Image 1 (cartoon, one colour):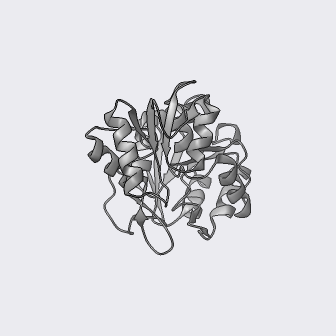
Image 2 (spheres, rainbow, N blue to C red; image 1 turned 90 degrees about the horizontal axis):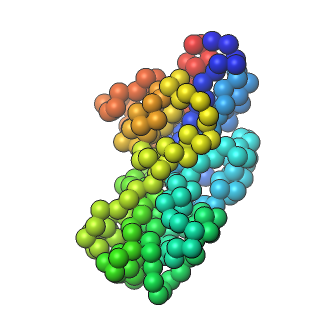
Length: 256
């Protein structure tokens, strides 16, 4: 395949590029090799806590330039509110940034049009009560993602989906979910990657999000074992490519 027709490569971050703050060996070199071969490499993450610029800086610390190449579930959630709406944020600063960029107002009391829930470590009973009360009063419940766990070097910890589930149960509603594998994230990726995505590759470690997201946008799924899925586990949806890590997937793409 000529360089001018090399497919775009969408990479998850947690479990593909790093685990927590620890780099996955060979990931930065794999990104450089893919770019040198003519692939556009983008990063699509359900991690919503950090502002986009912070995620870009973290990638730089890992040896990867990514300004303008990061799409987050916080951004996808932000696109689900309208300018002028009043939004209760039960999430991190990345969601606050996305809401304000949309022209909506972050509030803690009074009329609330939407509640956005995402991963953050300060969540407690009072936050659950405040968020669920706003939803019962008529606010829309939006989740940045519904990932039950979040990968770390010490193993999985509760993810944004676990927090979202508690608010949804307390409020008695089904949430709107923005991140992978759902449509709001797909819409953002399509804005960033023009043209046909059928030859693109989504590299991820979680089939229930990354694999299904690949199917939603109509591209190939490359599964890696460096994240939350134990090697040898049956993967559904079935991946088009499989490798131990991103470096292994990059070698396979290089040989196509």
